[in-house]
Length: 315
Image (cartoon, helix red, strand yellow):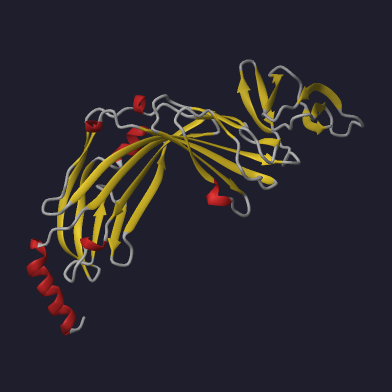
């Protein structure tokens, strides 16, 4: 480190404590995340943003670090916004990564100059604050979906807005496939044609903070600071447009006194569940015939049944 840098750091150390930031924005978002209408996780994202007035010749950056180090966010004159997000298996695990004493630091030439803590704490946040959202059509792993499908979904009442996003396995859609919908919406048809093959859709219900005191975010002393908790419920699904995509069996899963398998279907197609008790047998036998409607279908076999080999024939 040259003498000029040392002198600059010393001057900054002497004077930066008197400097007040204009208004840093600190946002914690906690969301339920419903994958395939069956797996509920909890997502936590943390955002730190600044504007030009938050920096001067003495301070060129700020950082915040969560109690266990899961989240480390830095804003500077090079980047005015920073965010990180992670999924957690339960709400207690998710909030454990947020609750506690965070570390706030002012930076000069990228080096920490001032360090202090501020606390994020809870006063009763629970899973009841995050009712799940669902995407009902197209169902998870559905095949043969229309290039402009009617997407239906449901979620908790009282949302301030609903957001919906679509993305293809390859390429991109206009406006990144995202649209805002009124909170009363229950379906959406994209204004663009979906690409053939695998697609993903997610729906976000933005929830009002009816009790903002359930999560308390302190302000580090001596700086301008805006902090807020936001809530949302998110549902995710994937499906194939045209051609039905890959026809594959998922399972087996224990189902009462038997075992069940599932597979995607296309509207207007017929599926024969076929079996052999010996792979060397010349013919497959039909166990069940199922009419496709674009949703996943299931067939079940008794646990007392002799060993068999199964396949699905699509017509």
